[in-house]
Amino acid sequence: MESRPVLLVLFVIRLIWATSFDLDYGGVPLWINRFLGEPSVLSLRGRGDSSWYRAVNSESCPLECDCPIQWPSALYCDQRGLRILPVGLPPRTQYLFLQGNSMSGLPANAFTNTTRLRWLFLDRNQLLSGQVPAMVWSNLSHLENLFMNYNNLTEVPSGLPSGLKQLRLAYNQIGKIAPGSFKNLQNLTILLLQGNRLKTIGRADFTGLHSINLLDLSHNRLDLFPSHLPPSVQQLYLSNNSLIGLFEDSLQGFHSLGHLRLSHNQLRSPNMAPGAFNVSTMVELDLSYNQLTSIPVVPTTLLYLYLEANQIEEFNVTSLCRTVGPVDYSNMRILRLDGNKLASHELPPDWVMCLRVLHNLYI
Figure 1 (tube, rainbow, N blue to C red):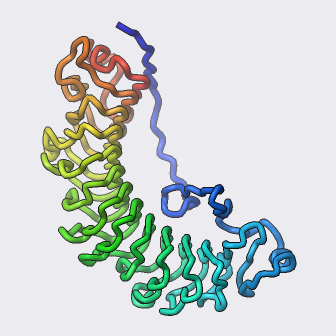
Figure 2 (cartoon, rainbow, N blue to C red; figure 1 turned 90 degrees about the vertical axis):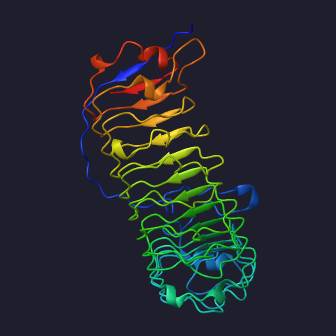
């Protein structure tokens, strides 16, 4: 039998209070494809003199914006204190940066001339749902990426173009999703709704999302694990809610769920059904910072299990391996148990056989 070294790490958890700034537009990094000529920067602020950009570029450019010659399809109007959309947006625009302004609304004809728009950044404005009409999106059949994080939206914008691949609505004031809000978004793969005020998820709330890969519902007000989620989800984030438990069938509707994050909730062991995590496709499970008193039963195919900062007092080998033998063992690579009521000398003798391919154990 192959023997691998296991690292036991003993350390003291310290609470570090810090202010974090959203530098990656809603918590998920952007993928910039330079082979398609996409701009490699999201803002020109501090990168040069605006008058220089205007002097070396003969193309039309609104006075409130910068139009760098190296990215002729990009228009930078970010962080200008704008209250209204600049007039005269050139038709060549495919990447429009309007983040960090003070706009509260968009006129219905805002993008009439920019029908080739593919990326639209509206983060950190003061957009209100009543001032973003559905007609504003009617000409944007090429729009694939829409960023509206950190605004004052109370509803999911209506009339969104069907070609969208990612929609970022994080840190708004959305308290309810109107049924059918996403019915035409069959191509959407990323949906960020974290940092809103959602309390429940209705049966028809996510109807139409057939291709969704990443769904972020963290930092909301959910107290029950949401049902009726799109079965195509591979990454589901529900951290920082008020969840207290999971049912036996909470995860049974997913076809390829691989990453589930449930940290910073109020999960308790008596409220966790024994088969709640019986999902063979899952590779990462984050249950840290909850109120668990025992290790939950997880599939042997799981690779990463985070249980730090709970109240676990006993290491249950059967939760990780139903049986132990030459071909029966857990595939886990990283197991975090630090911040619980366990010590390394209290581990049962058969844990090594169960976790024989483990790389790191934190306790």
